[in-house]
Image 1 (tube, rainbow, N blue to C red):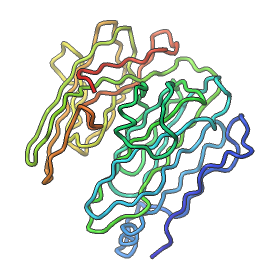
Image 2 (cartoon, rainbow, N blue to C red):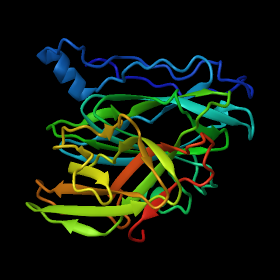
Image 3 (cartoon, one colour):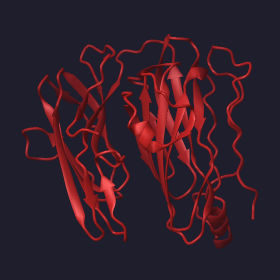
Length: 333
């Protein structure tokens, strides 16, 4: 069997407070080539799902790699990691996130990435997911991803951030094979700019946290409706990915849906063209379908991470940063 893939932790020694210019994570190995895998290669991927190569940002930015984890045969992994953004430097001066790029070891991943400016009484590194999600910090959604890679370009209207911010990555992995897999994980690149763009993006999070137990062989649908308390221009809609098999979103008061994902292979996000312009008091509605095809019941909503959510990116009409991101929670945590 090929040697296990290696990930060397980010070294900040000698980096200073300027843009990250020192060496960072080094990966060994590669994923299955686009033209396909022969049986020997496929078997080696199951034994050792190689870490895909992802170059680090060369100027302003950093790479957040997970720790490699083992997932037993026909098992699932639900892990959370918290990262500090000190390596971005600049003290309290803002930076602007222009791109988010993620790669994952092969097979079935679902990733939810959040960011907060609030103090979080949890250390960097792996943390219990229930502790992370129950933290009083306001986690601003950054991206969701499924599969093996995703790449979001926000250069037209970047996110505002700072080196004291923290990032939470909730990573779910399903091993549907009869063999254990070692070193399952991801690498997340955050690219940035130090110049104030015009306009600046902000994220909203609308959630229905109604608690529901989905029994084997049954299906459930949760829905929500939330209004904006300010005028906004919505440039992207997206959702959490785990367990949701179909999804719909639209404008309050209109019968037709703006976005219907179809099934579990459907799109995870929508870039409306032209962007949606909503005035204060106008809102969005959404529905999530869950289906349990396993032998065990699972919980959605409440304190579980599988809440029915509508996430998105918006801008204020005058392009200014919004100091209070729009949130709406229909049921308490």
